[in-house]
Structures are given as structure tokens and as C-alpha cells.
Length: 233
Image 1: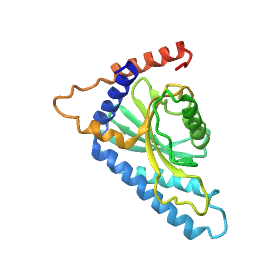
Image 2: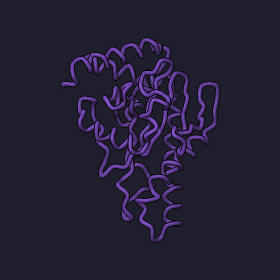
Image 3: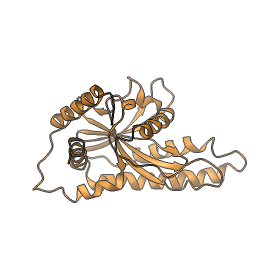
Image 4: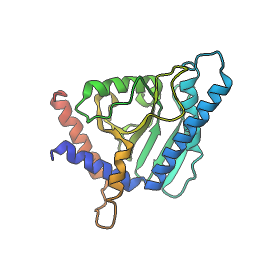
């Protein structure tokens, strides 16, 4: 197993350490319910206007509302954040030493879940993400990736391309992603969220806790190494 694969394994275990499995399940169920609610609202409200107009915004804000409704506890809280410049809102999940934001990504087909070496493909996903959630790419937003105090991850439900005949009542997939500190440069992690469950099954007393500062420093070294290599595969 090479260093990149080891870092990915450690990152997955850290996510499972900071975000309890029942909390992830709540988030996924909330996203699923939000898709159904938004889809029903759109079909009842718009009989003539193409759904490609109101659809993406409806799904995005209904998902944010659903996440903001989740109950909080000592290590889990969801707060409403305003984009800068003002005009939009998004839910920021705080779970111990993790922060998570969610954005609905429109795809023309089933989302490609690949390792970080497929940079051209991930670059296209980043372009979609930046268009749909531009505040995440601004310096005024909460830092992505391995920031000083917390790991900022993305939970990305995907929907089909918006046509009146396609089904938007449920995500066609949900990805968990951890971008580089500069999100345009790539991802430390980009995979189907379902792959996390195998790591939850490993969590127990025999697993040594992963300290965030240690993980953060390794991720930053990986970014520097990748930058020095010029992004060559």
C-alpha cells in the first residue's frame, strides 16, 4: 500500500472517529427526505415552467433546511451560514474536529467515483461545484480541507441533469470528499459515502485515536509533495 492509499485509509478512519455513524445516517436520511420533498413541491407548483430553472435551487435549499433541523448535542451542531457576498445560505455541520458542508451536484449521468489521480475528471467536478456553491471557493468562506483547527469535508448528493422527464426524487449517489486546502488543486478523498461503513465497523477500543494535528500535517505535506511534482501522475 503506497503513501496516498495509507493517507486515504487514515482519513476515512478519522471521519468515522469524529462523525458517529448514527449522525451520518441522520444526514443521509435527511438528504433523501429533502429530495423527495423538493421533488413533490416542484411537480405540484410548476406545470409549465421547465424544472431546470427552479429545480437546482429548490433541492439545494431544501437539503440545507433539512440539515439545519437535525438535533444538536455536545459534539454535533448545525448552523446557518450566509455566503459572502450575501445572497445565499448553507448549513455548516460541526462534528468534533470536523466541519461538513453539503452541495447538490447536477450530473448528466451516474457520478464517477474515482481516486484522486483522475485529475481531469475531478477538475470538471470542481467546476460544477464552484458554479453551484461559489462561496466555498472564496477566502471569506470557512476553509476547506485541512484547515488549522478542523477538517472541512464535503457531502455531495448528485442528481440527474434537470429535465422534466428525469427523476429527481432521490440522489443518484452521494460522495464524501475532502478537498485540498486549495480546492481547485484536487482532493485528498473522493469516494461514495457508502464506502465509509466498512471503517465504522473497524472503530472500537482496539483502534488508536487519530489526532487531528498529526493528520493535518500529513495532508499538508501531501499537498506540498503533489505541488512540487507538478501534479504529474
